[in-house]
Length: 208
Image (cartoon, rainbow, N blue to C red):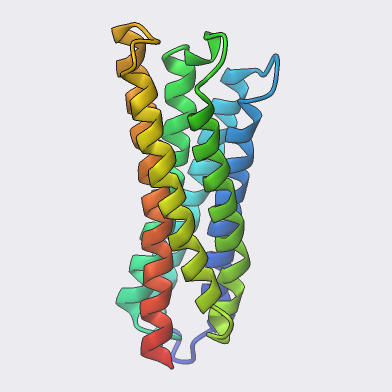
C-alpha cells in the first residue's frame, strides 16, 4: 500500500462533510413521507441509495487513514467519527424501509410525535453538515454540540410521548409492534447524532 507522509488534510474533512450532507439528504427523504400521495417505495429506495453512498464514503475514509502516515488528528478519533456518521445513516434508512415494508403509511395518518422526531432529526442533520467543515479550524464548534444535545433531549421527549400514544389503545396490537420498531430507530438516530457531536467535542478538546 502506498503511504502519504504529508497529510492531505482536505481529503479527510471533505469525506466528513460528504457523509454529513448525506444525513441531510436522508432526513429530507423522511420528511417526504408526510406529504400526501407520497410514493413510499420510492422514498425507501432512495434512502437505500444514500445509505450505500455513505457506506462508500466510510470505506474511502478508512482507506485514506490506512494510507496516510500522518493524520490531521488522532486516527482512532477519525475512525470513530466516520463510523458514527455512518451509524446515523443506517438508522435513517431503517426508518424509511420499515415504514414501507410494514405498510404503516397506509394508516390514515402517522402519529404527530413521529413527525416531531423526524423534524428533530432534520435539525440535527443540518447542524452536523454545517459543523463538519469547521473541523479543519476547530473553531466555532461549541454551539454545535450544545444544540445537538438540546435537540436530543427534545427527541427523547417526543419519543416518550409517542410511546404513550402507542400504548393508549388507539392502535391494534400488531400496529403498535410495528410502530414501536420505527420509533426505536428514530430515537436511536437522535442518540447517534449526539454521539457524533460528543466525538467532535472530544476531538476539539484534544486539539485545543
